[in-house]
Length: 343
Image 1: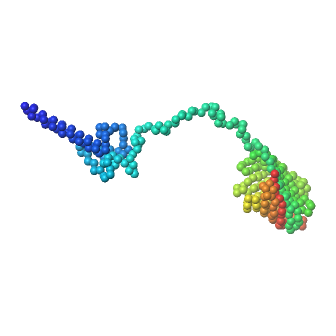
Image 2: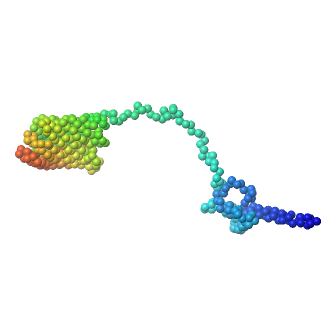
Image 3: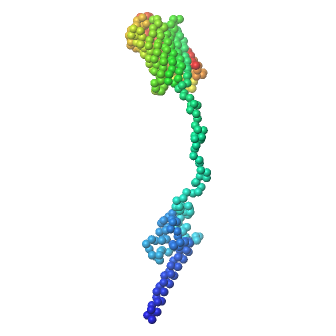
């Protein structure tokens, strides 16, 4: 009989606990969570873990969860739409769940086949179509100066020309210049040179020079460089070794300034040096002559351009003495007019 009096107590406690659990699950369903804690999949991780903490309260008994605040006017209740809003109040997209699988649209619909030997052969051009540019032969004839001049001493005619033929690496050069005064040739020379490219814009030249005047014919061995210096200065520097140990050198520097697309101003400087005196030719040792000119040309076409200018020349040292002894001035200024052409 003692057992019959104590049986209702455990039964009453079990009924009370079951009633409390049902009431708690009913509260979660009413708050907008149709899934209970037992029905929530373990792999569906929310993008905002702090919201799970708000509902589950790890470490607290199930019956100690805080109650939800009352719903605001115009809202259906304090559902997960208020708790699960991300930044800016937007509801997280269902695709935020970390599934680890790429979207089906990102996969190629048709696999790209690997290239075959026939594909590679069709894409590549035959090697015979790529001709080397340095194998082509080019040529140029330039009449740099053909001009009449008049000045302190007399009127006359002067010229300077050059021509070359060859490729990018090897060229054959022909250069010459001279001057006539009063129907008499004062000076004239011609050079035959082989040129080899030694650097971008620079050629080394070696060959022969033949002087017709002054003082009769004379031959020299010639070697030097020609090319384009920094800042676009055209430079030609040549040394000469002649008969009986005679030596000489000539340096020419030109620069072209484009005033307009067709109007061009060209300063020019020429220096001549000699190794020893040569009274028969009126040449002294050291720096013999310096000539500075300024020419303004107009290019009707790139191949033809008339010009006008002024030239100043000066003799130095023993060369000046020889000129004064011959009744000539050591220096002088002259006006020039001529044409420049190339083809």
